[in-house]
Image (cartoon, rainbow, N blue to C red; front, side, top):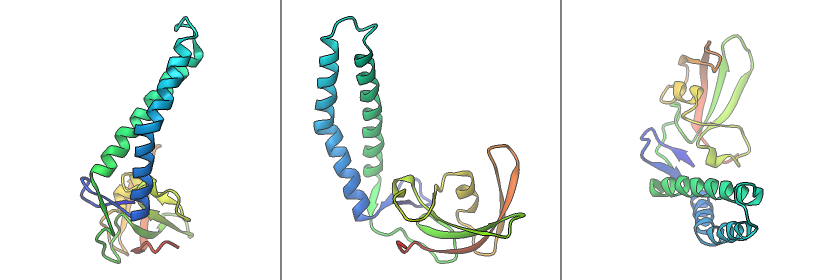
Length: 166
């Protein structure tokens, strides 16, 4: 799954779309039924203030509903296929090789959504500090981005090619 520079569209492979749709169908169908049964069973145990099973089931229900909202939004904005990409320009769905300032080693990763975390290489989000800094930049460009510590780090873009599934 990749997101284009247009934050309103999420590009998905057919496999990723099918996987997310199946997860949503499960959660909105049998998943909701199962959690409702857990809550009802825990409720029958009595005093809800001190009922750990009830509170755990309610927390699980909240997490499940949040995931349903997330999946619904992803699938609502999804387009199945390949995102338009230009070799040599960093963008979602690209395999990117960079060299960090003060380090001779090159680092290669996929710039994509975390929904593609099953890929065989590291995945960096386009919305991460590094991803945001290099998105739209061309091979040979040097940019800096802010680390969580507040310091800036420079990075040079060595290569940007469409992800081939390695």
